[in-house]
Amino acid sequence: MNIGDMIETDTGQIGLILDREMLYPGHSCSPVRNYIVMWNDEAPRYAQLISANKKITKLSSFAVKGKIK
Image 1 (cartoon, helix red, strand yellow):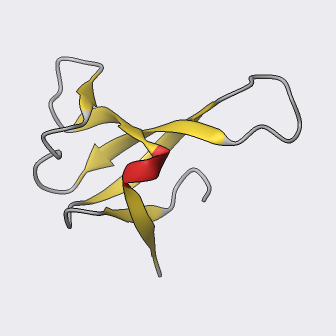
Image 2: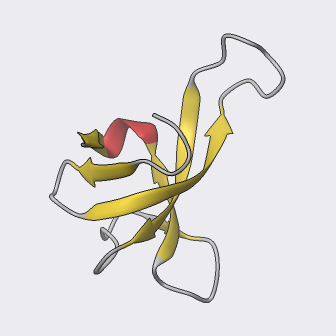
Image 3: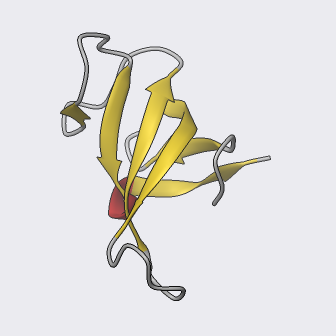
């Protein structure tokens, strides 16, 4: 998944990917560790707040169900 994609979590929340945090930064084959996501409605309870705005959080890549087309 890329920056700008709409995603759905395992619990049904929908959001927009703003950034990606890689497991091994600088390595060309590194998997994604976390996504920085802006939520349409409410963020999932397990998402980590990273700013004063509660709609922008850090989300584990394992919590993503899939990309919305």
